[in-house]
Length: 402
Image 1 (cartoon, one colour):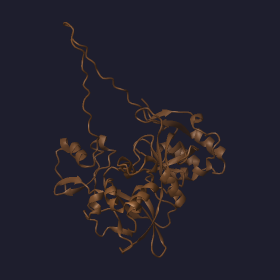
Image 2 (image 1 turned 60 degrees about the vertical axis):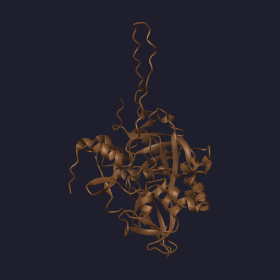
Image 3 (image 1 turned 120 degrees about the vertical axis):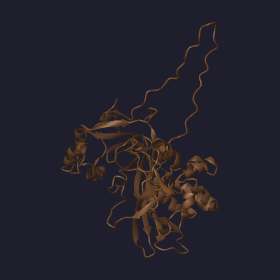
Image 4 (image 1 turned 45 degrees about the vertical axis):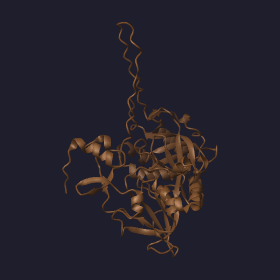
C-alpha cells in the first residue's frame, strides 16, 4: 500500500507524532534597548552566537592516563571481534589485517601496533566539556517458562507484526539519526503503543509471547539491559537478545523516584529501585509506566558465548562499551578514563564500542558491559561515574575537523 502524503508536512507530522523528535523551542530572547536620547537611535544589539564545538580534537598518546603501563592483552579479543565487522571497510582493512597477524600475549607489541596504525582523538560534549556520565550494564538471569503459569505471569514479547520502522534518512538527511516507530491507524501513521498501553493489553501482541517470567521488575530491567538469559523450570538456560523497540525515548524511573522524594539520589541504583519496588508493590505499575519505552526480544542461538551487541558481534566482559553511535563509530577502540563504581579508584581501560542503548545519548556518554552473574549485576547497578573518552581512528580515516 502506498500512502499519499504531502511532503511539506511529512517532517513536522512524523516528529510530532513519533516520540518527540525535537525538544520544544525556547521563547526568543528579547533585548530591551536603552531609552532613546535626542534623535540618536538606540544601537541594535545582536545576541552572541557561540561557534559550534567539534565532537573530536586530535590528541596524543601521552594524554591517555596509564597508556604506557597498562596491560592491553585483555582487550585484544574484543578488538578482533570488531575487526570481523570492520575489516571489509576501506579505512579499517589494513589495520585489521595487520592486527590479525599479531599474537595477543605481549602488551608492548600491541601498544606499538595501536600507535603505528591509529590516532587518538579526545571526545567533547557540544558545550565543550570533556566529562560525561559512565554507567554500567550486564546480562541478567530471569526465571521463566515458555507457557503462562500461576508463577510465571509476565510476558516477554517478540516484535509485533504491526510495528512499523520508518526510515526518512534518504529523503530527509536531518532525520537519519531518529528512531521512528509507529503503526497504521486507517491511513494515518501514529505512534506505537506505549509501555502502559502494552501492559494493559493494547496491540497485536497476543501469540507473540516468547517466555513468561515471574517478576515484573526483573523484566523491566531486562529491557533496560537489552539482553539476558532465561532459566526454564527444567534448568535449561536460553539466551535472548534485543529485537526491536516501540520508538519512545527512555525515561529513568530512578530519577522519577528521586523527584518524587521516594529515594535519595545515592539510593537510586538498580538495587535501590528493586528494594523500593518490593516495599511498594501497589505503586509499581504506575512507576514503570513513567518510562514509555518498551523493548521486544528474540531468542538467540545456544552457541553464542555472550550477548550480541549492536555491532553484531558477541560482547566481551568488561571490554565492550555501549555508546551513542551518532558520535562514536561502532567497532572503534575507545579509551575510557573513569573510576570504579562508587569508588575513586581509577578505571582506565582500552575498550571497544560494540553496542548502543536507548539511554546512551550524548558524545561523552557510555555504558560499561560487566558481563553475566551476580557480581556483574552488582557492579553495573551501582556504576554512575564521571569519565573522559578518546576514540582511536585508523590513520587515513580520521574525522574531518573544521
